[in-house]
Each structure stands twice: as structure tokens, then as C-alpha cells.
Length: 379
Image (cartoon, rainbow, N blue to C red):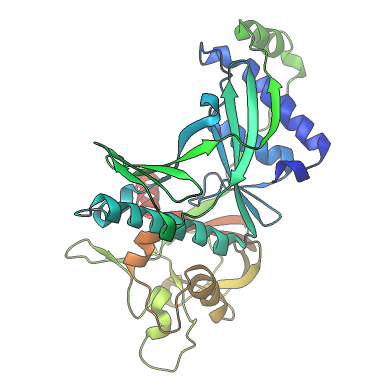
């Protein structure tokens, strides 16, 4: 388990801050259970244990430390035996049409496992687990449990109701909500690691007045900063049908282009001209090399090239293809990348973060991210 291997000072800070946050519950709720927003817990966890915060990335984990991927769950204790959401498949609705309950369970399990495998390959994970922060009456209970793939070949009891299908694989119990295309897992508090009381302040407004108004002179606020970023599509669009596809002889299938002999890992990520128009100074000038850090923290040398600086490539070129095609997507030599493959993983774009003019980061982004980004950027 992750939490047992952390420094006592970090664990004490984590507990103290959870108590402080929970004490202000009456700002948001009248429940006797401490109120904790899931984003707050994710941010506090990463701050307390110096973990990389991936909660806003499109991946199965929320935090990363020492090759351990952690999904952070915040929910009501429910006697330590409740079902909680672990994955949504709204973009994959077409994959479930016409399937019976057994086939739906098979499909959703395969999709879930592909996402877990994808996270492992992308971030170089040696272990994946859930860190559960459960809110009970007057206290917080913390436990951890493995983030295990569904054992597809051991799926047994399948019970279909009006809008859901319950099933088990011998290790865990699941519930697939067919109307919401959402998979839930039963979380059982069998390994409680921390259990501490939370004193909820009856009138938290008084506490805030005392601290923030009467002691204003003691407060120094830093400006909120956002890392500049752009989204890039790893697909093309048929102008006639508006259908998305992956070009067979360019982009991530550039290795398949006609003409000269090519390395089987030769790829590039397209940079639409509209991105250069809206963000003219985001990328360096053509053929200027920079460092590109991958989600697993390794780095490549990269540059933008081709006419109109329309391609993001690595130098040597095959390095980017080795990472995307082989290490992450697990495509075989000469196997074309298709949009159907991207749909199964729930992604069709990458996001590029600009740290400074010589250092950039790259990560994958969920389906629709590029379209939403363009719309927001032009509003």
C-alpha cells in the first residue's frame, strides 16, 4: 500500500489538512459527515506526498509517484461497502448497441482493461491502486485497494436490471449503468490505514471572519498561474461527411507514406494552421530544437518542421513513433493506427504544455478535447 510507505511528517500534514478542510463542512452542507470536494482531496494528496497531479489529465489515475499510479476516490463511507464510479464510456456508446447483457459486460470490461493498460504504458507504472477517502459521521476513514483489471475470463454472475447490469469477476463486484454508460466498482474497506475524528465547526463563517477579515494584514496572496498549452489532433476530418479518421499515409501513419524508404517508427503530430494563427508564439521557429518531456518523465529532442511548420517531430524522428506506436499504443510493425483504436482508448488528441521556450511537456487528451479547445479559443 502507498500510504504506509510515506514519511510520518507527510502523513500527519495530510491528516491535519483533511481535518481543517472537513471542519468547514457547514459552508457547503448540513450533513454530519465531513464535506470534502474531490478536487480538494486530489490536490491535497499530491501536495502532502509530493506526487505528480494528473487529476485533470485524461487517464485512469489521478496521481503519480515513484512509478505508482494512484486513483484518488472521495465518497461517503456507507458502512465501507458502497459502489463508486470508476469509468465513463459516453464516447463509446456505438460499441454497446445491439449487444445482450453478457456481451455488454464483456465489452465494457475490455474497454476498462485497455484504459488501465494504457495508463501503465504511458506513465511506466509498476503498480496501480485506489486511495479511498471515505466520509463517515464525525470522522474520515482512509484505506487503499488495488486498481486491478477486470478478470474477463472469470466473470461469473450477471444480473440485469432496468438500467444496470451487475457482475463479478471473483475479485471485485461491478455495476454497469447502461443509461449513463458508466462503470461502478464496489469498494470494501478491508484495509483501513487511517481513521480520525473531524470536529465540524457549527458556524464556519465566524472562523473565516476572524482569520481573513480581522487578520487581513497578515495575508499575502500569489497570483494564480496557468501553464500555456495547446491541444493538437491526432486525427483528420472528412470534409464531406465530417467523419474523423486517421490518415493512412501521414501523421501517426507517416511510416506508411509512399516514396523513399522509411523507418517503421517515422511519425509526426499534425499542427493545424489555425493553431499557429491563434497562438503564433507558442512553438519555436521551424527546425529549432527543444526538449519534450513525456508523461513517464523521459525526454525527447523535438522540433516543428515541414512547410508551414505543420508537423511536430522528434529528432531522431523514430523516437516519437517508438513511444506512441510501440510503447503506448502497442501497435505491431506495419499495423496502421485507426480512429477506432483511439476510440477504444477514449482519446484522439494530445496536449502540449509550454514550460519555457526550450522545454515542453506532452500528454494525451480525451476525445473531443481539440474541438472544445478550438471553440473556447475563438469565443
